[in-house]
Image (tube, rainbow, N blue to C red; front, side):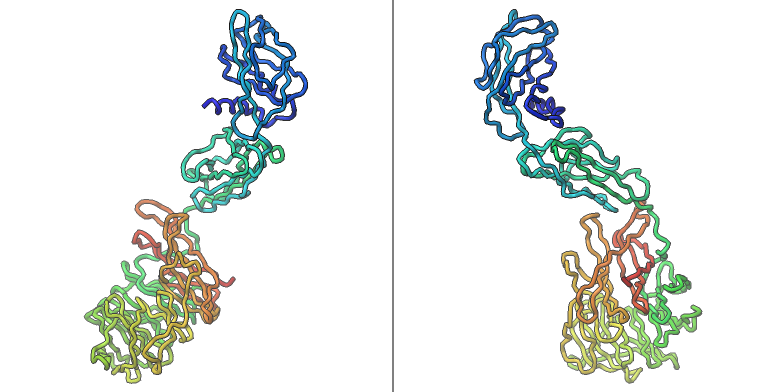
Length: 575
């Protein structure tokens, strides 16, 4: 503890040490009482030089030097304490080994015999802090939106002890000696860095009550480095307004399915609670809604682009795209889980019992289709159906049951579907096909060639859509192909160690090599969850490229809390 006291007594000279007699300034101290806890500091000096201490309670007394270190030479061994208590003697000091270190070196004691008092002992010490070299690795600390502490390394790669103090900082940060704790440095506290090392400080944002906008300031250190006495580190932080941008369009309810018409750049979305059909045009920014009398589950756009097909609870509904007028309603006794236009005057749909049906647009007949897998003589069941454009083929699969697989079905005879092939491959909740009908995409990043009647018994993987970092990647929530930009886009969620929350990300791949091009972080969304209004990470369970490939229409939700905070956002990906 005494060592620390000594250092604090000396600190006011750290920034003014100059030449051979500077140690004398150390000895101009008022000593309370006779216990001289404060030592006499010396340095080698070849000429006799005056040194003194002040003893307020010992006045007008003579003294004799009784004992002293051999490196010290006295001009005379007799002396006098004057009427103010000033004890003076003249000494010179021989050279001695004085290594660079933080703590003082003890050189011995001077013992005086004071008349009418007795022996008085004065410790003799020397300090050599060498010549430090102060520097920092970070000249700018930009928190942006992060509220986590950031490291600040203060370096001293020289043969000298670096003393420093924090002289100035913005009110919205603290500087800590710890990389994790709250050992905050007070302004004007004296600290040190040993020679040839660095110390890691941390800058901690304290933004409570800080107004929205960008805030900037300086952290200033004063140091004992004569060549770099002032070190400045710029700090910057951004406080948001807790309001969503005008480009974000909220959606009420739970999104169940979505499609996109590239002829008009219009997103077609269905929701439950409330049951609605929503159209949003990315060019005009116009949103249209239609209230539905049944809860919708699936959606498709007719092959001519004029009609919306809705699979609902106990109903199939046909709606005109331009006017949103209902053209037809067909009652069923089940939920229509998935629906497609067969491009042959028939619609095909599945129900919640994993059955496949056809609907004749002319006769209005609904017929259950039984497709037999001949090698096992069993019926193929499923709830996911996709039409391969410009070919008499359906892709038929299942999601949510153990018996998964993919079947290729022949629609040449529209009301009597035929079996072509079957593969033991899973495509989860959607069979996603490239815009040019060359590839199929699976959520676990596999790219397959689109099968046809000549495909063999194995679906071969043609490529992988992989995050280069890999550590964050789990699976894609949605994959979309843009022929205009020759891009394949994937969306997935990941855990952000900076914010300790899940977030969403887009990755763009080249559609010929499947090499990664870039990553885009999804914007957060402001909403109130459990009474707390905040920015929350988002995912994009559905998204589509516009006709020219320059924009993406994102159908998003927040990623945590099982909340319904669905919204639309259009982002520019042309650059």
